[in-house]
Length: 226
Image (cartoon, rainbow, N blue to C red; front, side):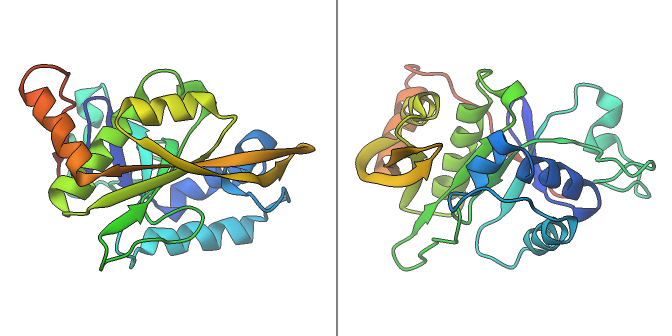
């Protein structure tokens, strides 16, 4: 488990997360986030296979479920008994329901380069949880994990030029726009530019020094194993 001040980042579990993914991939507004090649219905079998593959891991970097940190101490992972299932409750529902997904493997395809120490990410939050600062909080954790813990050099992300809230959130935490692919995505009868942004490790260390000097608020990041 990984924690920030208000969030938990956990591994996916197909037993309780498949239904959430199926809802996302079969809802037009969210399916657009995951599919740039056009909308189409997604079967239970396809979703189950995808979530199962992602949950097994095996890649260099993980794909994680974004969850709210439990407010009730009795539901915190530290309070669970050794016999308790970490991910699934006795009724089969998720013990810590997903409010979004963080894909550190690259989106839509893996783009981790070990030699050049670069990675790209994809991040998604359900609409009910946007505008609350959760996105920047997750991204601050990503910087800590990739630059502090793993020693990567460069992190990249793509977004539509029309997605101004996302671009604002990325730039707020230190991403710098590097360019755009003009009219690269066709959506709802309109051609969209795709904006590329990146953060270098020296950008991260400079921002971290400012936080240490008291110029910015530090976002707490911790790591817990079970």
